[in-house]
Length: 251
Image 1 (cartoon, helix red, strand yellow):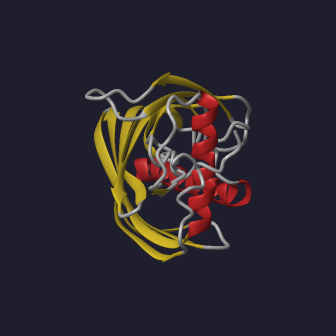
Image 2 (tube, rainbow, N blue to C red; image 1 turned 90 degrees about the vertical axis):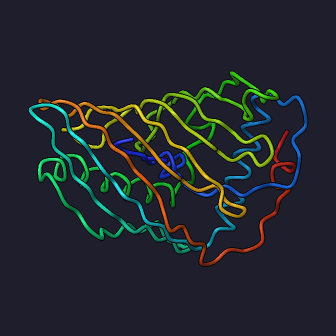
Image 3 (cartoon, helix red, strand yellow; image 1 turned 90 degrees about the horizontal axis):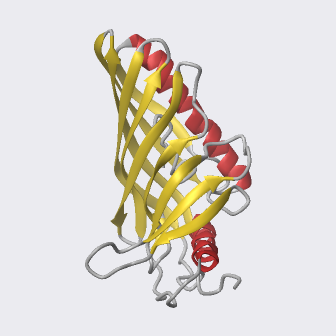
């Protein structure tokens, strides 16, 4: 996740897909790796962890602040559950604050996340070569940064959440630690395209969404900043993971 963003679905797609958990692989990547090598291993691990993670739940808290004709805020808490064989389910637990922000920002966002979850369940994760061009712009450097950094650019209109920006890929497990960029679509008429940052954290063998921040212009009114925090992540069913899935990806 996103994805989330006013649509921080980076794990609902990106991360979204998150969307969203990344399995730590035992295998150590060869060096150097090409862009194709990195992407193939990332995709292979995405497929493997999707098959392994059979059921989980988490709580997402949304807080949006509007700056325009004054300042207003709104909040929403949603419980997300996933059971193997169906898309993620989003259940609104509570909502408060500005009715305008809830109607024009939070509710369209939740609708868009449900749509992305259904598409992901049918078509798989969005971060694949069919949807994106990938370019390696940085590699792990001792003492500076620890990830492969890939620039990503959509190559088609996939009728789902896509973005233009960068992803940070763990060199050991090929999971996405961070994503940052600009959406190529908006979740509603009232919300323009947005810039977002998504960070992950590791729980056991899984990387899960930790936080997301996005900034977007609200048409006519001004601009809004959306913060999303993720908590209470629980794996309720999972099978053993093939930690060497990345090594077995096509070369």
